[in-house]
Image (cartoon, rainbow, N blue to C red):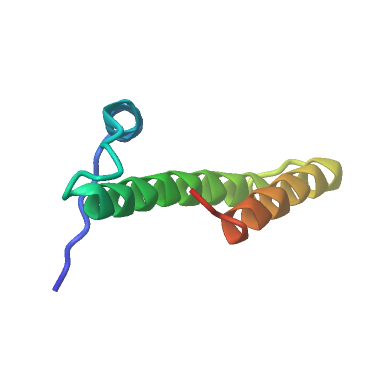
Length: 85
């Protein structure tokens, strides 16, 4: 059974940035695993952003703020659906 691990956002960002800078050659034997890991981390980062956008809907003070937050949430969700790293 897989267990989840909590890491700070700045560490997640640093890992993603490190992997982007590392950029293995397309002929490297670990290229497939590298791309899979980088994709998964970027997806996780976007899902965290989506969760924060949803929280803004719930915590909005008035209907206008709630509508704006919902529009932002739907935009982020659309980007998540169209993900192509």
